Every structure is written in C-alpha cells, then in structure tokens.
Length: 149
Image 1 (tube, helix red, strand yellow):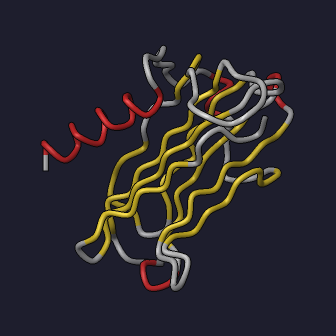
Image 2 (cartoon, one colour):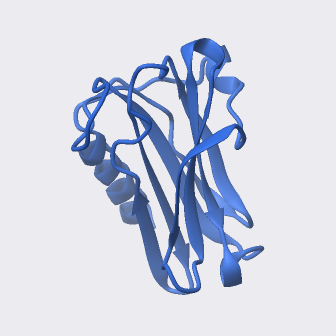
C-alpha cells in the first residue's frame, strides 16, 4: 500500500513537471466542488464509475477546484480516491502544463468523492487536474490535460 501511495505521488509530480508545492492558504480553504464546470470526464464511457470535474469561480483572481466523484456502481462504496490540480504558466493552447502552483493531494478512502482541491490566480491561466480511484480491483485514472485556457 505504501508503494502504491509513493507511486501515485511520483506520478502526480511527473505529470505536473517540476513544481512549487503550495500548502492550503486561506484562499485555498475557500475552494468547493461548485461553480462553473469547465471540464468533466466520466470513465469508463459506458457505465462510468469515476468522474473528474474542474470548477471555476472568479474569486481570488480566479479559483479553479477539482473533485473526483464516484459514479454508478461505485457511488456510496468505500474506495481510495484522490485528486490534485495545478495552475499552469500557459495561457492558451493544449499540451503539457508547466505548473506554477499545485494543490495538495487529497488521497483517502471515500464513499462519494475526493476533493475539493484548488488553486487561485487562474483567471488568465490554464489548469491541469488528475484524479484516481481504486474500485473493484481496478485503478481508474483520469488526467484532464490543460483546460480553461
């Protein structure tokens, strides 16, 4: 189990590149699984059990938050679920994210969702989120790629 957590953390760091880790500041404490949905992806496409959602609101120079939801048969079932989001240096386009701020990882056993995790100062920047859920012997990974540009 410890190896799995270490691998998950390493994968998140590799996904976001070299980053500045930001601890929960008062502005981050205000993030919620609400606002305008800017990205949503449920997996697998038929009979989804996991969904990564990114929200946006205009507070604190733009705040994006991410939540990883249990869906379908996984809803209400205890499963290790995690989510993390990063603010990118990029302001447009697609491709990899050069992270300028990264939320802490929410990684625990949940019945309904992990998160919210958020980053502020995103009004003119892209964001990139990652969610993961272990359910029924399968690990479901969802990576948003650059969004909200």
